[in-house]
Image: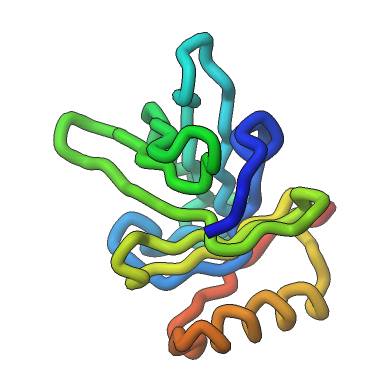
Amino acid sequence: MAQVDAGRLYTGAWHEIAFRPNWLLEGCVAGVTLYTPTDKPNQVHVRDSCRDKTLDGPEKVVEGTGHILDPGTNAKIRADYFLFISRETWVAALADDYSWFISVTPDFGEVNIFTRNPQPGQALIDELTAKIKAWGYDTSLLVYPLQPPN
C-alpha cells in the first residue's frame, strides 16, 4: 500500500477514469468522488456521483462518512453510506504529485483509477492500466466511462 498524506488525498474531487463494473456503477459515466474533511480525526465526508448513461444524464449520488482505517499510513478507507452499506478501499499506487491514484478492494476483486483531471490523456491511462495488468488483474474487465471535457 502507498503512504498517503490524508490532507492531500482526502480533499477535493477525484474523477473515476476506470473501474471494474459492479452493481453500484451500472450505467455510470463521469464519476466523481468528492472528499471533504470533517472536524473529526481520521474521518472525511464522501460524496460519490456519476451521470446516468450520458454526460447530460441525471446525476446519481450517494453520500457517506469515510473512516481512515490505518492512521499514519492513511491508505485504507471505509466509506459507510447507509445503515448496511459500506465499502473499503486501499490506495495501491499514488502519483508523487497526487495527480492520480489506483484503489483496490481488500479482496483485490475491484480496481479503480482516479485522477484530478477528467481528461488525463491516453498515455497516462495506458501507463496505469499496464500497472494494474502487471499486478495480475484482467484489465479487459475495466470500463473507461465518458468524462467531461477539461
